[in-house]
Each structure stands twice: as structure tokens, then as C-alpha cells.
Image (cartoon, chains in turn green, orange):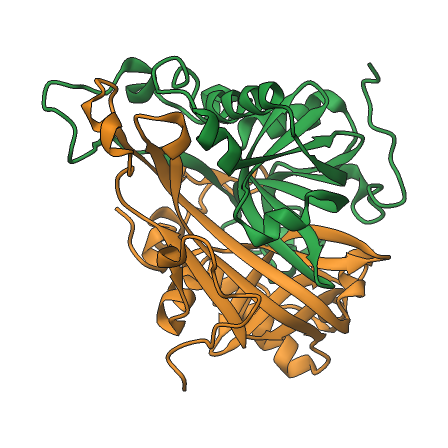
Length: 225
Length: 225
């Protein structure tokens, strides 16, 4: 396997190119840490962007949808798609307004999405979504029956054209502004998990299992903190 | 002002319509709490989705970009745009794989984006971005000079066609599955802020001001926790 995606006209960063990466390893780490993507596609000539869950298996991105979603049906024909994943890691506070920024890791994937029709691949993809978001859950829950499988739309998007854009570290100010007496630095941001909330209909003796109580988003991918 | 957006063919939710809202107040609360949007537009016939900062002033969304960004220049012509904002509030863990879900609040805005050419409106929008992300910062920092203003591209998108999609609360399982002995409930998620990190070039006597030390993302909008 190629360790790098080949930059294309669409994925090559012209501006701030030092923030770009085409490394498969880096791109896959970001895809594996996040769990929501924003999918862009055309619907009646209008760009539409919707958030949804996804999972990755090797060089394929599986996108979660519903058969009854009009917008997702538009993806069914193998039309061009852009999938973007964004992790915000912090606010970057410079001495000048202009140099304020954010630390982030984002991925853009261009390509086509195809409907997964085989029941076996579809079931595997649903397991993938589940284990991607909350490892350990799949082994416990009732698995989808035939009717439920039919209601799920799963899209398959080969990972061929992708790039990452990453900013880390302190602000970069104009030389003259370093003499300023304004505080400058970073405010880290991450997703945090609260205590589990029992379903009101849960029998009292049922307690949240360890994989729920100890759930950490960051432990699923690259550690941030 | 109309308190409701008029649902259109594009914004009316056909599926899970009980999750939809067209209330201006609800839509604006979500826009005011989040600070990253995903902008979808066409570039050479290909849908492109990029994350960026934004701000809202009354019924106008201002989108932050750069003059040197090829993609943002494509927006300059008033082409159709879709802006999506997503807040993930939690994982919803059902007894069946099929009924797993997420709690979230998302906004989709359709419309056209126009370049802000007036220096005054542009400067106001930059202040808006700053105060939106980190209230109190603008008063402290060096404001943009003429050259910096020119390097910023600000887009203006009137809020005309918008909808919210919101899911809250516990899982909804099939009746038969409530007899299951699997734990079910919610895992709340929110953005958390870490301790400020000083810029390595900061003089030692400069300490982070209160608006940085006490920064809370949720305090800027609807409180979640």
C-alpha cells in the first residue's frame, strides 16, 4: 500500500501548504479519532452538507444513512461527494486580531460514494459504525434483523483522494507585536464525556458496563491530552 | 421579524419530522453556541466542504475566509452555498444496534454568499468573529490594519432558508427489547476547555486574563450542563 495519497489539483494545498499532509497514517488517525463527518453532495443542483456517522475499514470509508432519507438517496448513484472531518484542538490567541487562529486537524476526501447492496457487507459496516463510536457495544446489543438491515443505507467510498490540514502550536505574531503586553497563547479544546445517564425504563439493578463508564473519545484514536 | 423560517422543499424534514424546527430563536441559539461551520459549495463542478469560523449579526451569517484561498474565491460570485453547523450532545445507547443514535443539534442554511467589500462592514465582521469565539478579546488585541483587512475575505449570507434538526433524550427501543438486560441510556458529550498554555515568547509576568481563564464554550450560548 502506498503510504501517501497522491496530491491532486483538488487536494493540494496552495495556501499554508506547511499545514498539509497526504500521509495515509496521519489521515487515518484523524478519521479514526473523529466519529462525525460532513458529507457534501449535489441535490437538484444545490450543494447540500449533512453530518453523519462513518467508519473506516482499510482504504474504504463507510458512511451511515437511512433508506428513507431523500438526501442520502441522491448519493446512491455514485455521484461526486466530498467528506470532511474536523477535530478542533484549541483556540490560538495572538497579540493581533489578524493572527488569531485555531488548532485543528481536518480531513477532506473527494470521490464517489456507492450503495452497499450485499447484506453481509452491510452488516459488517453497521458493526464497524458501532465499534468505531463505542468499542465493546456490538457484543452486547441485539443485532439488526433483516427488516432493520433494509432500512439502513450504507455507502462505500474508496479512500483514493484525500488530504489532511493540521495546525498546532502557539500563535505566530508579527515581529513588532511580540513587544505587546497582551496575553497570548493557546486554549486547548477537546470533547469531554459526562457521566452515563440511565434510560428511565432501565431496571434498577442494571449498571453501566465498564466500556461505558470508562469511555474516552481520545482513547479511541491519537491521544490529545 | 418572522419568528419562524418558512420551510421549503429543501429544508422541510420528510423523515423524523418531529426532530425539525424552523424557529428563528432555536436556530440562532445553536448558531451562537457553535463556532465552526462546514460550508459546502461547487468548485469546478465538484462539491467541496470546508470547515471555517463564522459569526451572526441579526439575520446575516458572516463567514470567515482568506483572499488567497482558491476555494473561498469560488464563493465570491454569489454561488449557491450550504452552511451546516453541528453540535454533538451525546451518544444514545439503545438495547438494539438499530436504535443507537446520537443526541445533537444541527442547522442547515441554504442560500448565496456574497463578498463583503466595504472596509467598515468587513472590520465589523472581523470583530464579530472574534467576539463570537472569545468574548472580551477584541478590546485587548491590536486591530487589523489596512493590509490585513485586505487579506481577509468575509462573506455575507442572509439567513433566509434555514432549519434545525434536534435529537434529545433517551433511546427509543422496540417494545420487545425493553425486556433485555443490556444497559441503555445516554453518554453526554460536550466541548471542554483545558488550562491556557502560555505562548513560549510571553514575558513571565503576563498572566492569562479572566475572560481566558474562565472561558466556557457553553456560557456563550444555550447551557448544556
